[in-house]
Image: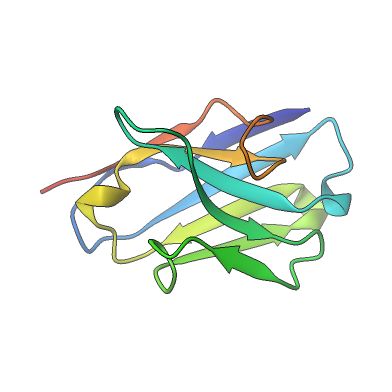
Length: 114
């Protein structure tokens, strides 16, 4: 299993970013996928989930209405569209094959600051 995240960066509060995750080494289209994050000094936090076919999505209360998960199974890619970013969203973001984040990539840093 290989998961490679990209798209992070520095953004001002209220801004947007789109994260991508390239998956390989497993049948991506057969698995629900997840985004998790870890802020400095805090534990890993579940952000959201998307079913194998993309039909259903679930979000943490802290990101509901601001973040959107999507996927392209033909390209083995998972996305996280993040809008209305807040300083509290600053974290290392991982895509994961399980909701606990035990199988995850190396992460991409998102920093929200003015």
